Length: 312
Image 1 (tube, rainbow, N blue to C red):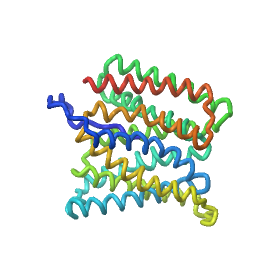
Image 2 (tube, helix red, strand yellow):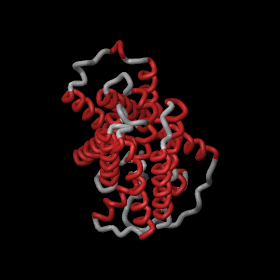
Image 3 (cartoon, one colour):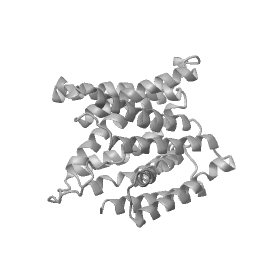
Image 4 (cartoon, rainbow, N blue to C red):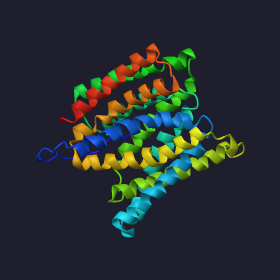
């Protein structure tokens, strides 16, 4: 999950309304469906592949491809970054890719993909908490949405408490959402490469390399058996590299420039719904009462937060 950030601290100047064209709806559909489906793809990957090795390989491949495309499109000069910018990209990449995504991949070895997506939907809530902790004063409606969302998260933890899924997996996803939020918040404060695609490419490389290091420390390479990797896992990994990390991300960055931010931000509460539906339809994941009720509360809370913040 990604949260759009607005540069600068002052009010946004008024501009003419952006036309919502067919291209905008196509790009938005890609972000809705592809990012919503990544949780399903991750679940399929980790059925036969080690979590951190697969995640690390995914982002190393995606980062190299993205930087290669940037060099082709804008020239090699677009890959330049100052030492400070490169360091910031590494920090953000470790928080987002290694911490945020990597822990989700590890958690999905024991947690259903739909439940993981609903827990990750808490990212906007954590961002409000971080803003409040650093002196910002969100509207009362936003804070109410945060409290409602945390109530939904409490309901969603019920399967872990009752033993339906591993509680450790649920905790990992909650920690992942907090780290993703910290990475997103840090990205709005740190100096990153001017080209957003270049910055994201370096973040992917840093997070992917971090994933490989963690995999080696965990000893995932010791029990590595290439013959045991299923065709479905290979296809899902390829899907994550090409569509999850490249196509949908490119569509998202383009949308930030071509569509109203209020429309782009709707992905935050559409993605988890798509993930739950795909998990139930394709993997027969159970739609239990805690998942349905807690998920509905979280989605409503995110809707309240996003709708309130976009008016500011």
